[in-house]
Image 1 (cartoon, helix red, strand yellow):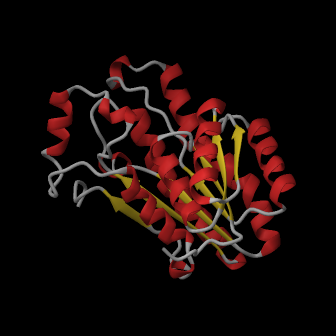
Image 2 (image 1 turned 90 degrees about the horizontal axis):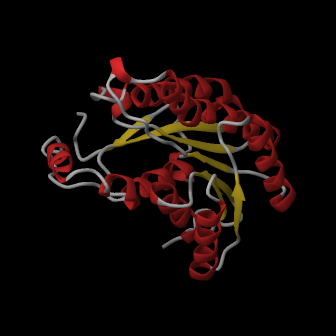
Image 3 (image 1 turned 90 degrees about the vertical axis):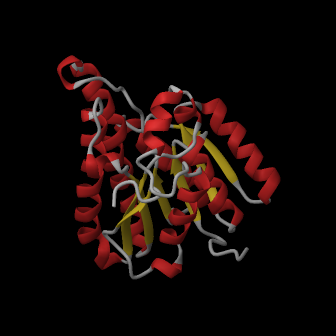
Length: 249
């Protein structure tokens, strides 16, 4: 595999496990120095150690609460102190707090909006300052097919992921003049620790909506993210790419 990201510094939020971990591993496998950010510092450190051993690249594990401005700014400061620059940001961190609209608490609404959407604003704003000065940057936001088509019991999650799409397009227009691209990836049913815990009946119901007839893997998402971060995608910005086996076509 070619080393498309040699000497590039990449921040991936929510990278301690699941899709975020797969993205960090893919970028590291192609030469990037990766920053594994997670609210679970232990899982971040474990992932960083695995990456250092397997890919012989620098991997820094940092605690961050992506919904807290001070925490995000401190994280970005640590990255600049360690590496002197930031080339890539992948806003992957996200949570679910599912419930039907009429039963959903304001607390669950606010929490999902903060972690999933406010975090994209905070992290992008903090990182873009450095990318603007160096006149280069690649930002990829992880949305969801739920942001495109909706889902019962996920009004908060759907709103947050749809918000990411609007944010992506607006930020892409603002930052394009500084050679910074902003794109989003919208995964569908991906096999992760979170989806594996779902009832079998629900998993079968989701699979019936996937024309390819199988769940995706975190690596499927990671491959598209890596493409959007690479020079091969230098003329793509404001785009939303579905990785969903045809679920939302």
